[in-house]
Length: 339
Image 1 (cartoon, rainbow, N blue to C red):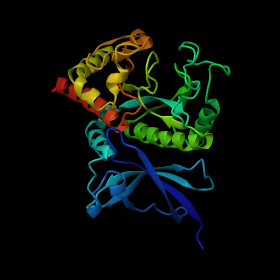
Image 2 (image 1 turned 90 degrees about the vertical axis):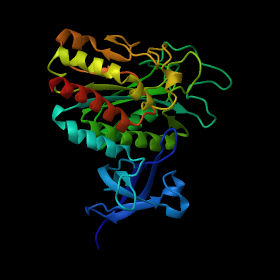
Image 3 (image 1 turned 90 degrees about the horizontal axis):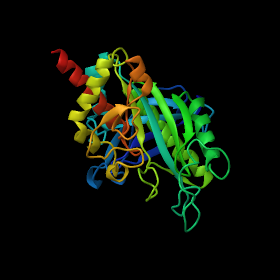
Image 4 (image 1 turned 30 degrees about the vertical axis):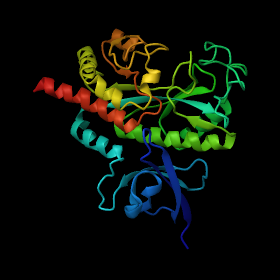
C-alpha cells in the first residue's frame, strides 16, 4: 500500500478590494504528481452559485513545515472549467510578461511588512484603551518594553528557512507589533510565489499564538508609520550601468498613476507624504531618499549600477501585479529606446 501525504492547496480568492488567501487539504499518494483539484467559487467570490466550480492547478510546491513528515504546501493558480485563467488569476498575467521580457533577467527583493493584531483589534504591544510610547525605540529594537511578537517571528523565520524559501532577513519595524521579512533576490514569478507562501505560513503560524498577522497598510491611525512592501528591482542592464538606472526611474514616472492603482487598497492612507513616504499622487526619485517614490540606494550611486527600491507598494499588495508592472514598464521602455 502506497504511503499517503497531505497536500495543502493554497490560492488567492476574489474578495475585493483585497484578495484573501484560501487553502484546503487533499490526501495524495506520496511522490505522485499532484492533480488538478476543484473548489466552490461561489464561497470565495469567484463564481455564481449556479456555475460554482473553479479549478486549482498546482504551480509551486514546498514541504509543509507545520505538519512535516512528507506533507506539502501547494500554491495554485485558479482556472475556470474550460481551463482558461480565472479573472482573479493575476499570476497568469505575470507569466505573459515574463515570457515577453525574460531575456532582461529581472530580479526582485520584496520587503514584506506586517502587524500582529490581538483578537480585540489592538496591535500587539498597544495597551487596552490607549497608546504606547511614540515610535522611536521600536525599529530594530531589543527588550521587552520595545519588542512584541518575537516568538512568532522566529517561528515563522525558521519555518521559511526549513523549506527553502528565499527569506533573506527579518527585523522589527517602527510601530510596536510591526515586523518585516525580506524575500529575494529572485525572479518575478519566484519572488511572488514565495512571498505568497510565506504570507500564508505567517498567518497559519500566528493562529498558534492567539493573534492575527495583518497586511493592512495603516493598521493604527495617527502618528504611526504604515506597512508597505518595498520592492527592490533590477534588470540585467541596470546591474551594469547608471544610465539604465535613470532610464528605469524616468519610465516609472510616466506610468506612476497606473502603478499606484494596483499597488494595494488604502494606499492614500499610507502614502501621505509623511512617515517616510511620498504622496500617492506625486512621483519622485532620489539617492538615499526614503521620502521619494523611488529610492536609489547610496551604494548604487557610488557604484553607478545596481538596483532601485520602489517604496510605493502597500503591505497588502498583490505581488503578481507589482512585479508584472515593474517588468512591463521598465523593460518595455528599454526595448522602445532601442527600436
